[in-house]
Image (tube, rainbow, N blue to C red; front, side, top):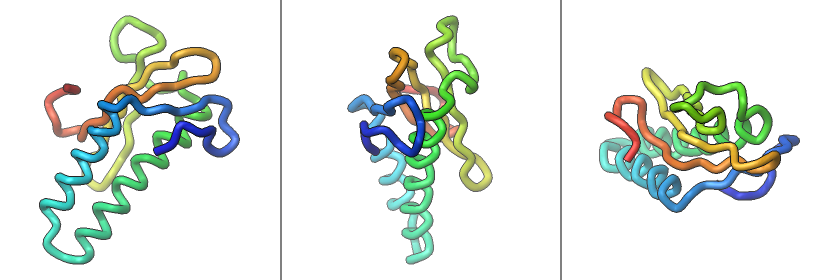
Length: 112
């Protein structure tokens, strides 16, 4: 997770401290449930794929994902993973910055 420009996108992607904590919490959950080396590999792959999807997609096209609430600048990105996936809540701050506010598993009740 980096604040630097990713790929050839024109938006910088940043994470709030809460969003970083969310990603760590999701990773810890996967690690706690791991019973084999393959499970550990899956946990790392899942979190890497989540971060890559967020940074790649939001750096290029943040306006195409669904709105969250009344503001056209507050949106959600769905990231598929296995049978479910993750949801990243983000805000388009200005013409060059997208800030990830929260990340949750799709089966969680809501953002916290």
